[in-house]
Length: 568
Image (cartoon, rainbow, N blue to C red; front, side):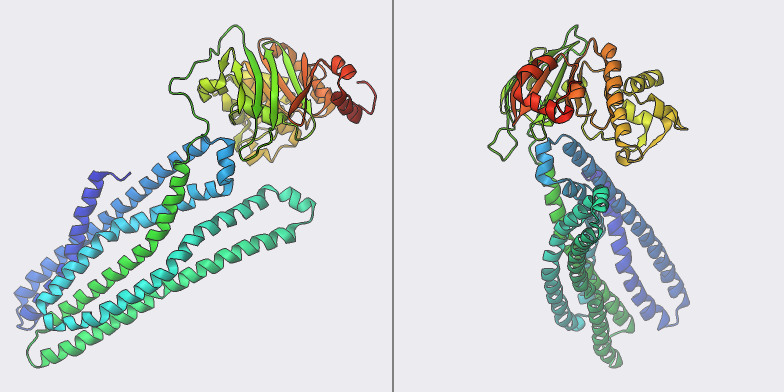
């Protein structure tokens, strides 16, 4: 993901920065020994000017080094997030459940950030510091090999200390990523379930639950940072000890005339460069395990094989065909990891101009059936066909363009009402939006809003009631002008009158569409051309309201429980 041309320039500026950093001590030594010691002002001005020029070049190189490293690391982060988001969008429900929402969010945000932070340090110092250490050590040994004994004492102590710290912090940093997932999960559950929490007075429990996750994270982070905090005082201690030893031995050599003062100053500067280089490399090394964990977690998502994929040469469904027919042909389906069938031997068909209803108790497979229509899962056996084409043989985009879907939870997105209604048809005009709202019985409350279609929708539509969200969701499905409309229990929050008015308004709008209404209320499905009765994932009844009322025991039980024995 890195651009070779920009990395080449980065390397050039790193070399300039390194040369400048190491040339300054050499020039200082020359000025002290040949200018200051002899009182040669011209020599001091000449080499002082060269020193200023080198310092300016190093300053510019450092700025450009930071610029290229920062922009490249940010670019890599952006290029990682895009495929991650695309991959997650193409996950089936099974794959999303396998990872979990909280960890997918963490991997797309926190893990990518870890990679960016490590990458910018690697680009800035992983080349610079080894270069600085090697060249500084060479210059130091060349100038005064007798003082090299100081490095024999100090460097092993530094390296052993760094290894000890790394062995302690690396496992801690690895576990931090997992604990970040847990913290995000608890926090997200608390936010999304806040109404339930308040309704059951469980604030104290949730606070304790979050505090436990937070404390666990904080303790691990504190332990890791405590070890890391040792590096700075350790560096100060060793740098000071090095300077003391160098000056101690160097001063003795200077006093007897075996060393020049300039060489002593230069050697001290070289030793600082060597120690600082080792220290910066140790900091980078501590970031690499965190980066490695982040990369592994991201690759787990990117390398996860999609369960639902398009054929290499998919069949094409004609969205403008004169007729449309959806058919379930003896469909069996079980959720991953379970042996029990969630749906068994489901067989029916619905054509344009027809209204098919599906009814049953909770957990009978109604929403599962809806998810199979838009291929959020693949079936175990049988087939689901539209106009004779198995939906597994057409592209997912082509399939979903043929279907207008109103979900059970009426999920809305932050933005405006207009943006939500045009979600499946960006070219829809305001007139079409108002017409869809009138059919969905939502025009009245939208028109009362000061901004109308431009009214703000908060995340999840939380600034609207359940019934309003459902009507907006139904209108959004109608705006798509799809040939197959699926309403997955999307009338459940409507009162009986609004439900009846909506179904009546739908009639003239669906003469060329196949309509599937999934519901739990008898009143919602009573006027359907055919009603499917599900129990335990099996189709236990099929017919009109009157036929099922007379002949189907399960339907009679539902009717009895809802109408208390009275007819509608």
